Amino acid sequence: MAITVTASALKQIKKVLSQQENVEGLRVGVKKSGCSGYAYVLDFAKQVKSEDTIFDHDGVKILVDKKSLNFIDGTELDYRREGLNESFKFQNPNVAGTCGCGESFSI
Image 1 (cartoon, one colour):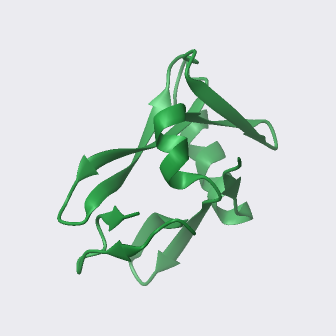
Image 2 (cartoon, rainbow, N blue to C red):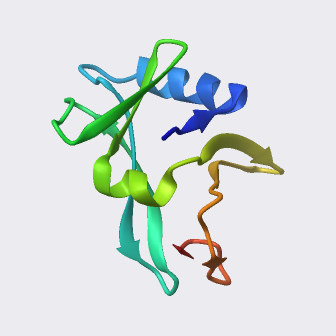
Image 3 (cartoon, rainbow, N blue to C red):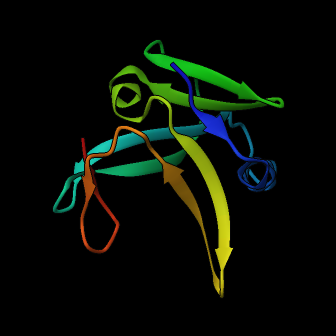
């Protein structure tokens, strides 16, 4: 089981985490949402929980709870600039479909 991070995403995660105090790393997960079923969630991890799997990328901890890991195992997290927009992008091999706006996905 693995979550990978591109160089661009790693650079942005380090930048954002450096501006926070008392964080363990970046929490990546999923929640029920949208018209397709699930949406990705990014948050600051203030503490490591017993159900977390930790992926270390160049000293940056990516924490994923066990339930979310079932949906995003094998995902690559990228960070892209497209015109004036900047955002994290998920390349998830488990996705069977997405909604029209791209905010949610199904497995």
